[in-house]
Length: 573
Image 1 (cartoon, rainbow, N blue to C red):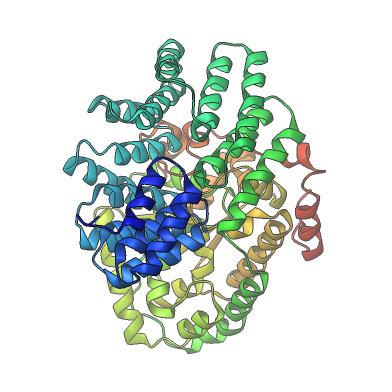
Image 2 (image 1 turned 180 degrees about the vertical axis):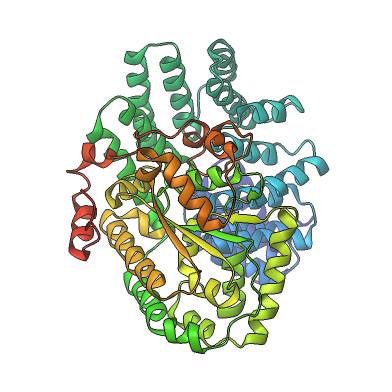
């Protein structure tokens, strides 16, 4: 802020500080009218609108401030926050990067960018950015809290405790101290250390009354503590109080906190055997997510249709393709929750293979060559690629791939959604092998609906859209199996349960790998898994995930109806 400000602007700042939002709005409006060419007036105007839970109006004000003062990092940060509150996560990330370009190392911009990257599915990049920020700014409490949130989602409580042991929360900020102790308590609860978790909770309570914005987090930790102590009655009371606190939160509450709270409650009620209450919470969570991720059936259908029409046998047989025959790439694809992580971990235990996790390079290559992903126009550009272009793209892709594990014969990318881009694989990577993971579509739909996926899963927030999309995935995969020149092996999740040894033999033969007894002990490997399947792949194969949909058959009716209409349940009992 400038050292000399107009009376109206000073009144606005003062009123905002004391929480008198109507007075602040009137004064800020007057300041903008009196001095429209001063960026600070628009900035304060935007701050008032943010405080009043009017992000669209705040965005306009911050944009005006940026037009007048393009290098103002704080204006970019607040513009990004306004876009985030409207669901525009990618634009929010861009705004934070703009702030960092103008003020390298800005602690607030770095912390926010890390949080937004995590929410949009870039967990590894978010962790790297936040750790860099903390190394540069050890006192950056926001970065530590955002990194702790990421680590807690990945069930890495020891890392959270180590992160908090390195520094103390700022004593002059009770809000940060509360949040700090609440995250410590959750890490301790994940480790089963109830007495220490209770002490951390007591420290939170000693600060003073729990503010509404933190009440759901508070009651969730008390719910988990009661469960850990074997008091189910108290746990149910705390879960009910958590739901009440969610209803009392204002529209300006952090969206991610509200979303995760709904999924936490759903998990609790599901564990209590109350399917109706659990499903209601999942629906509430998805209704919030739908505001951030709108879905278009028409666009997605056009994309699938374009792949079927333009990337057929004739295109692969008669059109140009890259010249390499590198056998290292292995793509494991399918719908999320279809068994892709399990399949990857089994292969990754092999001495000659490397599990690279969910990689983004194929999608990036698709964007670079075809433009907008999952769009019919992009398919046309991919189908029209020249051999020289594909050779160059393949060389860059393979260099990155081999850099991950130069000594391994097979390198596995298990990004499930890569099934969208298998046409590019057929053109750019003729030697690649593909494994398609299948599971009962009703179990897939149920499992997707019960998880808060980070990244873009717009199809998941409406049960009918979810069933329709699973059916479209079946349609597209049937096309690839009939037309793609690369070998595709289909593996059902139930195959591992019913005949592990026979299924493993099929998979290794498909990859041209020798037997390796380590594959049967995959769950003993000390590998990091960032997907929601992390707990399942730390134990031997079992049948617990099969047929789970039956307990929720009534609630899943819209999903099942779409699957039946498309014929996607043929072959499933």
